[in-house]
Image (cartoon, rainbow, N blue to C red; front, top):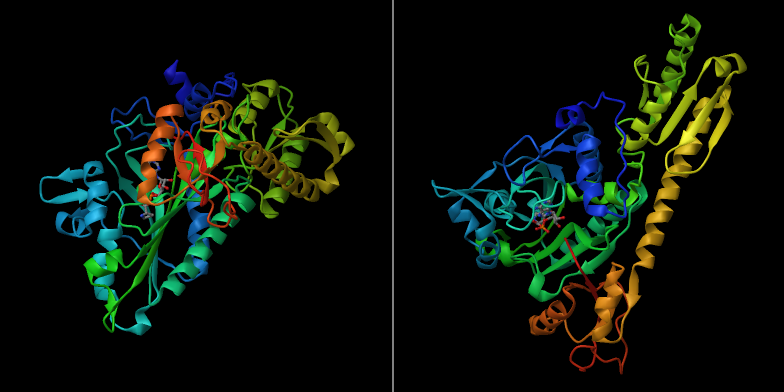
Length: 481
Ligand code: PR8
């Protein structure tokens, strides 16, 4: 059975796990749709990225790379091994990461993240004012010795990602770059990938090791648990002090941001449905599949027309395929491409050839339409835009429906039954708040994920629902991956 699944050419594959059973749906779809192979490689948390899945991850990385290049962050590539003496230099950083490192006996580790590698070079590259800001990014793999349950794309030990790192002369300049990062995250996640999440500032007890503060993008998954899909950190001078990155005696102010295969996991989970994947057009390996309805022996006229259609669509910038496989019935092909999440399908038979028509079916939206073949390109352009917009609307409505205000600690668990966030008034995000967070955890098995830095916080008279003290923040509580 496994062997059969490996062949992505096998168009008889259908997918029939309801999304309401999210864990099985996700695990099974990863394999059936050809995203990863986790069953034939015996290393925990390191699945093989198959071409269909890798295309999409790579497409997301390119979206970020282009955005970063656009604001002058230049791409580079550092070695995967980090000398122990570098990793251990920033005290909090090493404390946070040493148990997650794959250590090599030669006093090195595989990078769990690249601050210490890059900043040991920033020390050399920053000599004078002209060298600031120094901004680089790299697309690479990092390695973390994850001990919790691993899960394809979501929690892996070899993590394909992109990380950007910047150093600035002033805190203002560094923080402006953080604003740029969030604008980029919005453009990529919301405008292009049609998904949405909450930007949250993590409490002090849950910061990135070595950061002054940490902002994340938490996406509510279909099962109701949240997934941290972006980590964006203000490092202040923590690293520049110990790596001696300075100009005229002033240590630099630093930032970093990382985006991993979790972005793809969020996209696939959010948009998919009972029939399989539903892909936003920007990452779909092919956006249009043409399924001809052929007789035993296709007429030359038919073949020529299909070639012409494919060419026209390709010239207009679409990624298109024609499935000429005579072994499979059109019905089998429909199910297969549905499962693969191809946004648009064109059915084309002899009758259509004679009438100068084609039939257009949009994935996940209702209805089949008969269209005039002369309008092939504009109709596909419109249909694809409407499709991406519909996905975006659906995702935004999903997020909004998953935020519920709660004013009684005993009601949090009930609200979290349906998943998403419970928003509670809370007294602090400082380290002294950790105890109350633990109480919440014990009571309802959920975490304080943080507060929205751009949201209006509670006014006078609002009380923390855990301690009864004046509430300074609206804290978002959720169960997470
Ligand atoms: C940093 N330093 O490291 P971060 N599997 C998949 N994705 C993961 C995993 C994993 N095991 N662990 C983390 N991520 C900073 C920023 C350079 C770049 C994803 O930050 O530790 C999560 O989405 O927050 C996380 O937010 C992101 O990588 C960046 O990791």
